[in-house]
Each structure stands twice: as C-alpha cells, then as structure tokens.
Image (cartoon, rainbow, N blue to C red; front, side):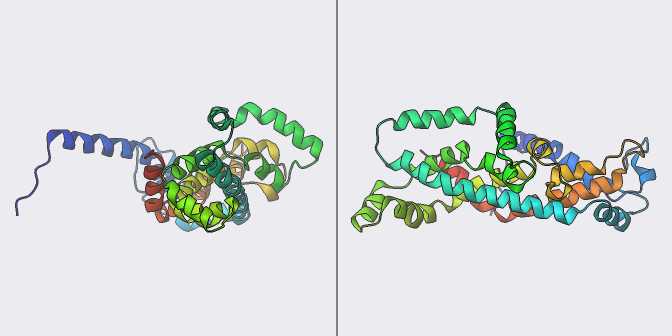
Length: 277
C-alpha cells in the first residue's frame, strides 16, 4: 500500500493551523508552568519552561487556603447551570415557533432576535443595575442569573437547527394529537441534542468566565464567581503572589477544559448541522 503524499497546500494549511494553535495555547501552558514554580523562579530574566524546584503542593495549597476556591467553583456551577437551563427553557419554544410555525410578523421577530445579538451586555448594564437596585435583588444569585435568562444567540442557533428537521416529522406529531408544546419537548428536543450541547458550551464558557457583571452585581464574597474570586489574590500592598494565583486560575479553568473535551463531538455536530440550512 502506497503512502499518500501530502500536497504543498495541505502542508501549508497544517503548518498555519499548528502555529495558530501554539499561539492560542501558549498563555495556558505558561499559566500551568508558573503554578508549579516558586516565587524566586517566576521573575527570572530568562525563560524556563520547567522549574528547577517544584512548588506544586505549596502553590496549590496556598490557593485553597487564601480564598474559598471551592465556594467560588460551587457558585460558578450554580450560576452557569441555572442560566443555561433557563435559556434552554425559553430558547427551544421560541426557536420552534420561528422555524416551524406560520404567523404574521415572524420575519420581523426573527430580525429583532438578530438585532439583539448585536447589543453587548455592557451597553445595558447600568439600566439593569438600577432596575435590580430598585427591585432589591442585588447581591443575590438572582442578580447573577436573571439578566441572562433570554439568549438571542441561543434562539438563533436552535432556530437554525430546527430548520433542518423535516416538516413531515412535525406534521406526523400533530396528526398523533401532540400539542405544539408537546412537539417541542417530545419531538424537537431529542433531535436537537447536538445543537443544544453546542449552545451549552458557548453559554457555560461565557458565563463561567464573565467578570464584568458579577463584579458590579454582588459584593458578598460568598457569592463571588470564579473570575471575581481570582481577583482576590491580588494584593497591592504586599505584592501579588503569582504562584498561588496561577494555581487558582488553573483550578478554575480545568472544569471548562474537561467539559469541552467530553462534549467535543456533540459540539462539532451541533455547529455543523445548525449551519446546513
């Protein structure tokens, strides 16, 4: 069997992809390496990719001692899971209506959904903050969750996927006497698992890493999410201890990496099928 010879274009393409991957991964690799170093080796003038003296136990122990990392991680799980669950609860029926139902103004509603995707969260942060202040729900889990319960991107992504579902499947469900809401949860949802997984990856990563809104919405350390919690390692008076700081950052990022690796196949399927039509 003759080995296949790669063309120059394929070699160039892989070289470019490997270069881009290396650039993207370099900060994460440096973060992990720094979390293994003692303070004396972090500020050396020369670059060392591996420390001469490992401080793994010391740095990671200090990371958990100086801040309630477990509490921050638990808050991150509670906030991101509830946000995603509420987003899916709203996005699935809305996407089904925009994809499979015929009603006056449907295209205008979909255009508004696309317009909402263009509005950054920072643009409406002040009105939302004032609204929550008057409602008395600042510094609560509700303040972290409620602003993100409706996801325009989630509605758009699920609608694009539902367009690929044959209308005959929906018509057959109607002939069997299933209501429109029943079709959403009993017919469309099982077929939309790849797209829902893809949206879940986007949603969880975005809100797990969100620093801006939790910083202004909560003041109690018991409600800090992981990104805000990491900021507590900074000490302007005594100086920042970068070893434990990088160890805490590594611990906080690890769940995202594990979750993405577990959902990688479904994530790719969801993105692929959502763009087929």
